[in-house]
Image (cartoon, rainbow, N blue to C red; front, side, top):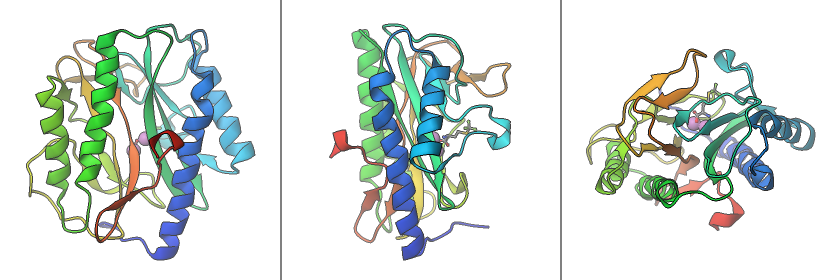
Length: 254
Ligand code: MF3
Ligand code: CO
Ligand code: CO
């Protein structure tokens, strides 16, 4: 199918979907506290997306995924399945929200620190967010995918973290995952050039230990092979002539 350049009216719909996804992360924040289960967070997000936003939670039944959001705790890298396990003080958890509104997807995630979190976990969370921003800074018409990957990898590794390679960002639109694949490592100037009207996600996963991944027996949950902590942040981004527009920006980032 190739990379889809979005029309102005599609871009308008992507702005709406992106804003809704960001709003879910803002809504859920006060609920992410010690003692809450990730199933409870899943239910609150599901009801908000369906009843308040009149949108669709994209993960639910996506290739058989059983829940409406992904919740990835501590050594879990991504695609964690909400469960009846309670969050506890000291946990770090990624909540990944994807909504479909008017046929278009918005995809975003952030890390939450539960209660009192250790300095080394906080640093991983902070550096991973900065790595996302370093990648986003590269996005403009004419830059390459390798520019994005290189900026992220260089920043992550200079901070002594490793970059997960098995999962990547992606084009997004009427489909959850479109071309191209957006790698979070690479060489500047390599790969295809970005064009105004492309919409991609950037969603780096950084590990405190080695980069290697293992997928649990549930078929979804990716964890670090060495069980070290992992963090991820994600935005949906429109490529423009002179830069980019972050479609999933939250109030706290403005
Ligand atoms: N939201 C994830 C992403 O950023 C994909 C989740 S797929 C699911 O691409 F099936 F696990 F929900
Ligand atoms: Co994504
Ligand atoms: Co996502």
